[in-house]
Picture 1: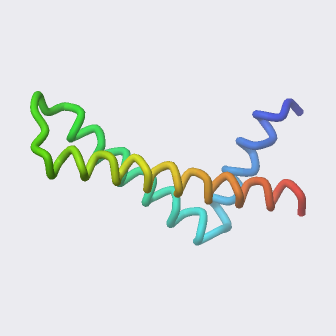
Picture 2 (picture 1 turned 120 degrees about the vertical axis):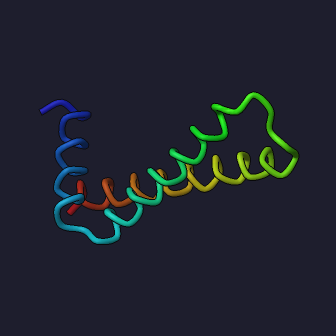
Picture 3 (picture 1 turned 90 degrees about the vertical axis):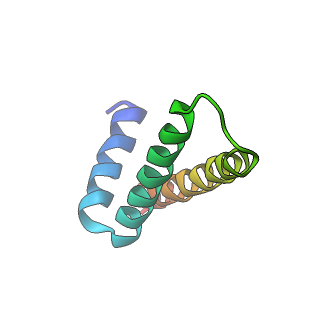
Length: 76
């Protein structure tokens, strides 16, 4: 099985069996949705710009945590 298919299979397994992975996935989706809302605006206030930067960092951190769970599951 190619590496990406294996990782995808592990992600699906984690979605089905890991509450932590599910929580992280939901968090990631919330950040992504809010970033889309901000991206749709023609103008961002200074506060919204700061929120956008913060959300991008949070989204990346959550993605890293999800990937760590995939790597951990791959090694198990």
